[in-house]
Amino acid sequence: MSIKEAARDGWLVIAPHPDDEALGAGGLIAGLTRDNARLAVAFLTDGAGSHVGAPGWSARRVAALRAGEARAALRILGVRTPPILLGWSDTAPHPRDSAAFACTVDRLVALCRRVRLTRVTTTWAADPHCDHQAAADIARAVAARIGTVPLFYCVWGWTRDDLAARLATVRSVALASIGRPGTARRALACHRSQLGGRITGARERFVLPRGMRRLADRRITLLLEERDAA
Image: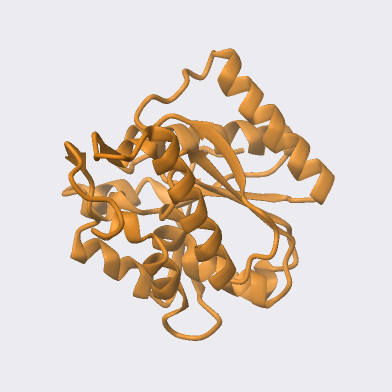
């Protein structure tokens, strides 16, 4: 599948946290927007748990900052519509049998039907983070409702020691990015709070490792399909 072929469909891109869209799907998003594809980007969590206890930074203020960073990143990637902020708390995903989970699925299904989105992609369930795994569960549920097969991109999964064995269990589709080199890296740079800037003095502080930042430089997006998908 080429980006031009992919752009014939409408896409829902789900990012577990603000910055995952640039790290895992920046090239895909930039290519789709360049070809004027129908596209919506949803953020599952509010990101407020990345800097716990920073003086002067309430959870609400951190969440507002991260939402602003996400909007700036999406503008660089060419997205002209506001992101969908689903508002889940960091590292506290709702169970699949909960009302909150069902409400999120209903909201995204309604969006897909209204805007005619027929592709759903999010982080791979093999990513070693509970929010990334929850996003995969959401994508499966939404895809089942709209009659499509979910596709997954990898973020933290690249760090797994058993990555080769895990990849052997899925089908992969490589999409060459189209657009100016460095677009995804510039989008990632908008997430200053995750790169060590903006917020200081936190009791619990996340800074994206430099090695992980290089994910935004890739010229190919690898999308994964589960082999037992209908």
